[in-house]
Image (cartoon, rainbow, N blue to C red; front, side):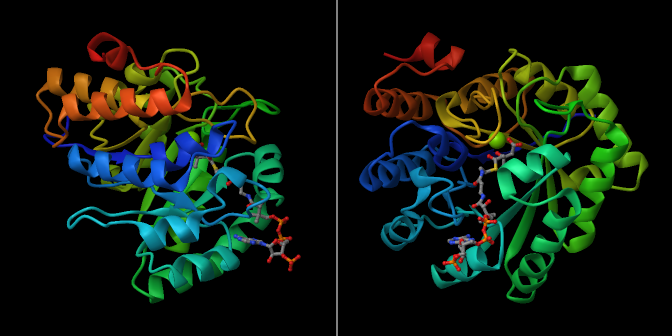
Length: 298
Ligand code: HMG
Ligand code: MG
């Protein structure tokens, strides 16, 4: 059944801002993080320690963390693809990281410059060293439902890739619909395939993009199966620069509205969050795509 409480894994500062055409000034990023924490979010994916040429929008990761005003009780995970990224993250004092794999060969090549098997070989020393250092490691898996180059992705292949990440030592697995093509039946099929293969539902998170307007329906399907960690992005920002047609993430405001209606606890103050997304939309120069922000925002 449905969980009594959901952890919202806020990815706006990372998945959101990595896809902006222009780089957002570090002061704006810092204020965004402060405002998200003040709105009650307790997991803020802050940035990525990836190659600065690949994602110039997040090239200020060191400066951002140096100037971050961390709030007690809030964790600030960052993306790390390889050992060089882990060195940088550890030097910046990071305590939570996420590695990010692809369920398909085509996207592993485009996003990581690695083949399907090679990506896990790249992550292996990252995950083992991070765990030895007491750092929490989330594993993302992209293209879990469909891939722009390979089409429909076989759930058995997704389960194999996801099990690889968990077997490396990832403590959580986030199932990504990178291009937003999933529908609830596919979500049910995939979550059930994982639990049938021995993965506890508590180890799973879901990460939906809203390209086809299915993100909330997909979230509801996952909640009904007991998934209790949901990724979302304030104001519905987001996308991956290396995935064709990866548009915005599920908006955190839309998620909060759904959870409120279901009576599921989440700890977020909706008004403060809408005000934050409205403020950021002004800085980005375009309105938020979130329906809830548009309904409630000024
Ligand atoms: P590569 O070019 O193969 O790198 O890129 P390399 O290992 O061959 O190294 C080449 C040079 O880059 C070396 O320098 C390294 O030191 C340097 P040199 O010795 O030649 O002077 N280098 C680095 N510098 C800084 N930080 C680093 C780093 N690594 C190497 N971490 C690499 C391989 C993985 C680095 C590259 O492909 C990359 O950075 N990819 C990141 C792409 C990305 O961030 N995509 C978006 C995030 S994923 C996503 O959005 C999906 C998600 O939201 C879930 C979903 O929606 O599905 C998570
Ligand atoms: Mg994403």
